[in-house]
Length: 193
Image (cartoon, rainbow, N blue to C red; front, side, top):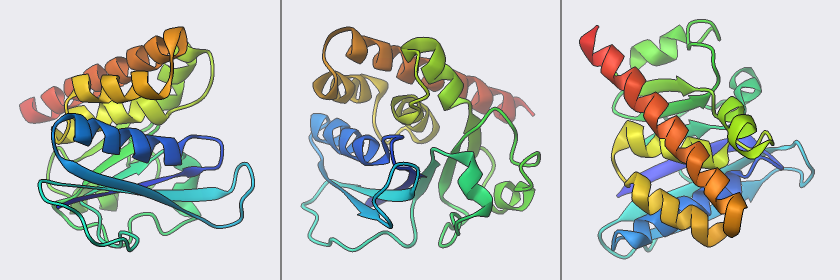
């Protein structure tokens, strides 16, 4: 079973991201579940969403304490919340920022993980360029597909189109593809280093 934890703030779409990720897994014939947990329910409050993916039915419903992958929508959370608690060396970490882990004072997090498993991608910048709004969730899902290979970009795109109709959906698909390409490029550079 693959367990993914998504941290964001209210209004950024962490809940929607987990739901779209579960739909992408369903598209590939797998079982999935997505559910959020909230602190205070207000715009801007920290939000955590969870997604599980498996080839068998999923019977557990507890929050994920030891994720196989961690997606961080809001980089301001890195020093406010215990984001990396329970993240083992085999996990993947995708952080929404144009800065590096070292620049954020998180070099030890990157060093703790296996090479190529910690990547930063400027999902908010990509979203602004494609959507005209700072909504990083779909861009992060595209980056997640590239980083882990657990779901395909095609399945992510299908899930996005089911969540958002017309041009809004297509703009979100473009954001996902742009982040996907950016993460693949970074992975290629780290493999050559």
